[in-house]
Image 1 (cartoon, rainbow, N blue to C red):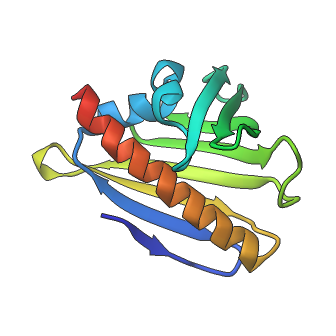
Image 2 (image 1 turned 45 degrees about the horizontal axis):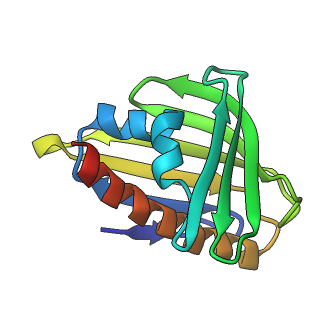
Length: 152
């Protein structure tokens, strides 16, 4: 299930119910051994995950398009609450879209071993940038959903 809610022109909120326990979803979202198995939207393959997973630590995540173009995102972890929340800056190393964002991902435990994941990103310089990220993130979350089925 995908439920995208646009809060403002410069914000994006995606909520998704995942059929996996919260601690597993958190681990798969934050552990490079898992990230390198699913990170990136459809038609992209993960090519690297480097991170210092602590508040103030940095990360760098890479993926390659079907045409062979490498794309890297990077940022700094601002807040980490184990199994509950990750707040991080986000930007494309090549300067695409021209704005550093703040991404907040929360993981809420639900009944029957499911997790409600809320993904919030802001600000965007344009509605076009927001909409492009909406498509990319939803495609990435589709891959996360499929990957979670393999690690339970």
